[in-house]
Image 1 (cartoon, one colour):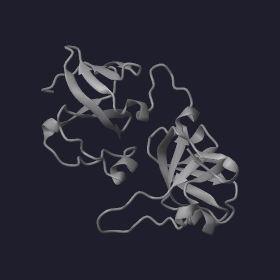
Image 2 (cartoon, helix red, strand yellow):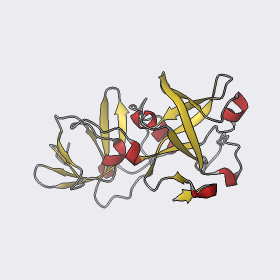
Image 3 (tube, one colour):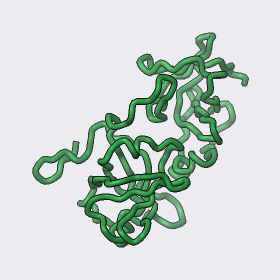
Image 4 (cartoon, helix red, strand yellow):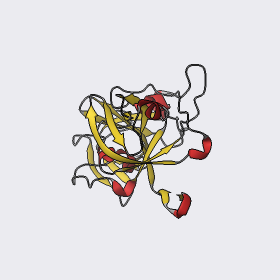
Length: 221
């Protein structure tokens, strides 16, 4: 892990990206955050957010606006308070006391320790724990691997990459907006990716220890 002056650990080995700072909120150093999940409990479950610079932004268009010099990354934010504000989260942090300081962090990616996530209910799962799991149906057929999830209204949908298909990278913009609408597919034909609603009608069980999602689903659905 990374360490700051005095060997204080500031970046955990189990860091998970959970959102992005999109701007300032108010005039007293508040931050406006776009969570990467419709259920942003990971952002509320810890007072320690770890910032990394914006991801590379290929192609034309506006670039991320974070203004911190490279040596300042990663940066630890000690959160005072965080609350939901529509589709965003508004947060205040120690050592951020004016709008300019908050604006300087615009575009930064937010990571938290996986160990800090609140314990989910027995029938609930964090998206990060589902990605990478194999998907098998009742006949034992391997349908593919979970490569992402999409929030469509009240329902989550598993994005399952078919065996042997080249994995389609999820654009950052699509991931950020997954809580509001389905992202566009990043190429490939319909046989390369399956969309399986994550509801009890189709998902029999999730075996995290065995790294498998068992579903009632046929390859020709």
